[in-house]
Length: 505
View 1: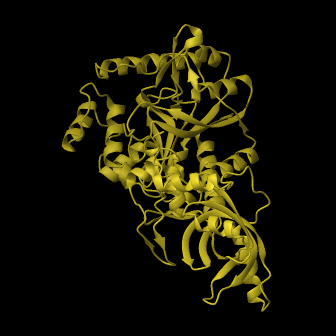
View 2: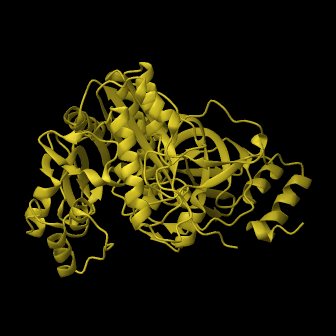
View 3: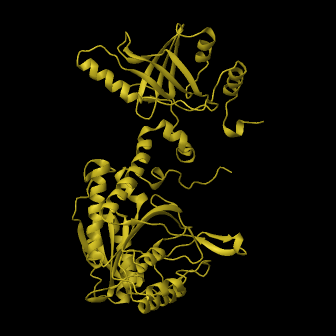
């Protein structure tokens, strides 16, 4: 069989075959009751600091990070997920055959060792190996390079490896491995605080017959068991979460994967993680307070402080955050008082700033274009942009006191939209009217070549709202973007475990 297509190395394969032929066990079933390397090193250092003799010893397992052969002695660096330690392996405790196998080990192999800790003549804390067990013989050359205390040499920095072969990249790059660990620590923290706030974690369908809750190109599939009926991957969990609210579940949330067949860039991936929640008897004011408290607490849990540094800029997530209406933001950051402008005046401003727009654009869509093109990049500290034009928010209650706007907010941080939230529209008749109005606008302005339908009407959802939905505040937050900020990652690809990337073939 040709193993080269898998990246297997001929020399390592040959060594594997030789060792197996000699009776070596290279892939055992288990190696339990191990001690982490940091437990050994911490205990040894405590004993030294107390002026005591080192008695720390244990059974540890990890990956060989370096090999230095000196006659009848072999030095290795062994690394687990807590740290690294030197191994001192002399031939005396081993038979001739056992030491031969030790000499056949390569960088990257996984082994287990037992023995006491001690200081070498060079002063390095090491394990004097009395027993060694091979746990996995590698057949791929891992581009580990060479390490000193303060530098790394000859290690692969290939972008293809970074995003395509994540297992290799995380193995070699402890910083990116910590970013991924932080991602899931954020999930744990969120769940803890939501449970403390009385929310129930629920699920919604991943495959739907009618997609909704957002404007997005869906991924299309079919259900074989139902005569290949058309179906779609979820673009948003919103409409199903609202069914929970109607049914009497007053505080619900989900953390789920959404799928939108659209662009890939620094803050977008076709598959992404969203958290969405709904809370009966509240409005968007309550949800602003809930979100800022949640993120402040998550920051403290995961980063130790509500003040973090993102790409060299200090961000302060301490509640309360600044609130600013979209019209105010356009006035402050773009110097345009769009409040009382006509549609033609809005178009004139768009032309002046070379912003492309559909000729049929209305006042509300024009305001959004001005905001997104001229204002977003200027918002650095956590800020709630509130009260959006009604034309872009079909599921939202009208702003009290201004029927051109709706009670909606988007928190922006470092120019990145972090979430989207509403005082939810609960009138079933107005909900249906809003759907129809939005579809008419979209059908008039959308590209002729568009091969999907925006906001198909979910009759069962309308029926559910017709059964009575209490006043409700709801919010959806892009978890990947939150992780980007807290992990100081420049792009979403750095914190998505397995991002979408074009296949090699």
